[in-house]
Image 1 (spheres, rainbow, N blue to C red):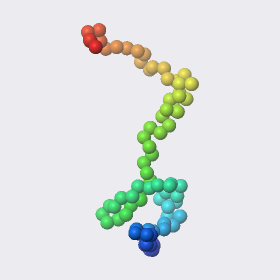
Image 2 (cartoon, rainbow, N blue to C red; image 1 turned 135 degrees about the horizontal axis):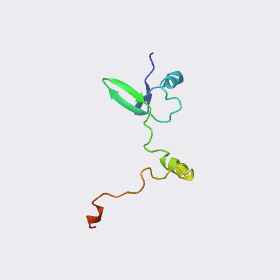
Image 3 (cartoon, rainbow, N blue to C red; image 1 turned 30 degrees about the horizontal axis):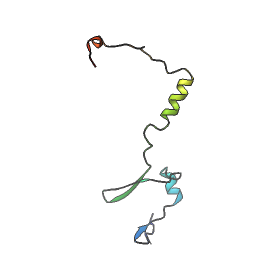
Image 4 (tube, one colour; image 1 turned 45 degrees about the vertical axis):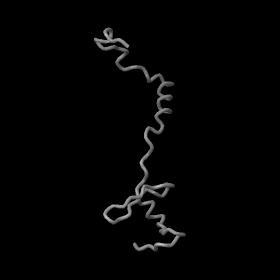
Amino acid sequence: MQITIRDIGNSKGVVLPKLLLAQAGLDDQTTANLTLENGAIVLRKPAPAHRVGWAEAAQALALRGGDELLLGDFGNADDAELTW
């Protein structure tokens, strides 16, 4: 497939066909990661943010009573000798 590289102010731009973006899984994205690899311009889906939804999942787990300790509360054998 050949596409036109257009002037956009002081930059250049391309219009990517919707079908191509859909095949790459980018059709519902508003951003993408762009890299240059071996002379090729590569677009990739951005990585999901770390720990998204963890706080909500922990709250839901606590409401269901699923947050009790698996091993119970225990100390180490030498804890009594520690000074803080």
